[in-house]
Image (tube, rainbow, N blue to C red; front, side):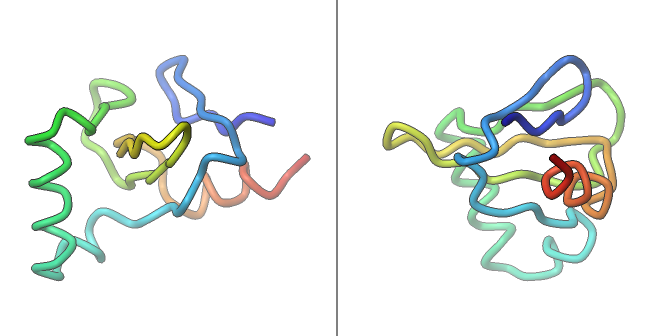
Length: 83
């Protein structure tokens, strides 16, 4: 199964580590440091042109990726759990 992130982008459901609200999680200095490090390493991939509301952390084949999505985390979670 795949999780649609928007802008014709999808990731494998089994590779999803977590779905996070961008507004709530970036209050933490640890999350900001993680996202800054991931961006510096080229692991951040925007899924669309709109302002992102969430990010999806994936890990597959030993590579971590952070996808920025314009969808609300609740919407992504519902898509993730629906067959």
